[in-house]
Amino acid sequence: MPSRMSAFDASFLFMETPSTPMHAGGVAIFRPPSAGFDHEQLVRLISQRLPYVPRYRQRVRDVPFGVARPVWVDDEDFDVTYHVRRSALPKPGSVQQLDELVARIMSRPLDRSRPLWEMYLVEGLADGNFAIITKSHEALVDGLSAVDIAQVMLDPTDEVSSVPADSWRPRREPTDVELLSQAFTEISTRPAAAFDAVRDTAKDLSHTVTRLGEKAAGVVSAALAIARTPVTSPLNVTIGEQRRFATVDLSLADLKQVRRSFGGTINDVIVGVITGGLRSWLQARGHPVRQGDALRAMLPMSIAVPAADSGHAGGNRVSATLVELPVGEGDPAIRLQQISYQLAFLDESSHFVGADAIVDIAGFGPPTLHALGSRVGSTVSSRLYNLVITNVPGPQRPLYAAGSRMLAAYPVVPLTQNQALSIGVISYDGGVYIGLYGDRDALPDIALLSDCLREAADELVERSRSAHRPLRVVTTEDPAAGQAEGSA
Image 1 (cartoon, rainbow, N blue to C red):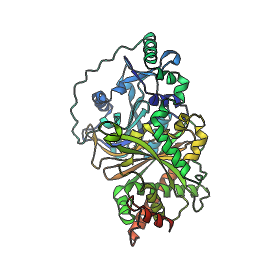
Image 2 (cartoon, rainbow, N blue to C red; image 1 turned 135 degrees about the vertical axis):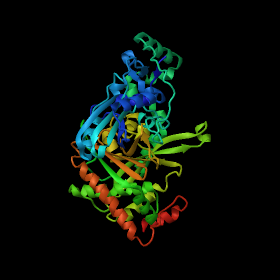
Image 3 (cartoon, rainbow, N blue to C red; image 1 turned 60 degrees about the vertical axis):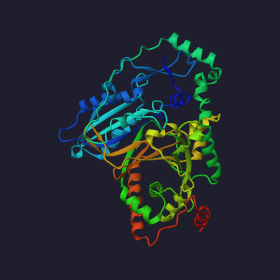
């Protein structure tokens, strides 16, 4: 029988609108081997790796009359060349041209009549390099343990890993009568399913609220704990269907230098850079920034769950932390100290998660509020946070796709209602790569924001080199001292 989509995964389909397509993705830059790399090689590579991601050969099938959640069925007409596409920039393709192409591709919703993913080989980049753009619907990738197509295509060396022979054959697609029969059988044997069987109920995430109750409570309590309203900003507006994209490259060694000088963690430094960049960007726009002003960011976190708590061998859950970004503070060292003070109280087993693991969190603000019983997400979520920042630590060694070395990777984190900007960060092989994804009309100056982030990083690095002594940053072992320092 076909696999029933979970209420949580189905919610991403129901929440999707033309202005908020629910897919995440990214763009990676590669240097081809001396023998070259072409579209046929990419198709062959993806075809070999598809057995590791079986959902990528399935499509969504609605149940007649909406009496139950959709199901996953094998795509009997699956065609890998439909999903793995080819594009090119006029040589030599610039970063700005690639960013514009990424924005246009990501603006388009995925075709629901086919498996919900796409991949683009982009040729014509400078220095003979090429890019691969990926996009996958959030209903397709379920949770922290999920595997994305962009992950399985990579190898730790330039030798292509051997894979088992692919014996996949699509199962026959069920008829409408069979789907209805299965749905009514589930409802009769599990009466609780009736509460979320109807489409409108699923839209309100009634079933999902149980699963996300702890997360929702954490976000709401955090919001209540923050007394002042976040600064009014151009980041919380009605968004349209088109997007802009920009990238920022930073040196991990430079950020480590800042950490050694001022204490805290690399995560703290990255958030500090983003805070400084946002401050400069707001000022360049002529937006008033006063002492004490703060933007509020939602930082998704992956938290290890002990076996005793999870009921099995342990695992992970996703939580969300609201952090105030002190854009009103002019001193970069003090900004960093204030951020470190907030983040130091987080569970030591937690870490930031990125676009590939964001499926439990992306769109979390408005959908969670829907789950709590109201459809006023766009209004209330604007009062909860201004933007989403995701940060995932990647491997500090090179990765390869069919012998082509990956040089950089930038995440694309989807926008939600009234959220005009998302920021995704990946550290990889000595670099820190930031993807800025914004609404096209709200952020015509997204390139300016990327420049501001670079300048903020340079400012922190320069300040760290001239620092006489590290700032004392609070740790979870010394909360009292941290409180005194924070109030000084």
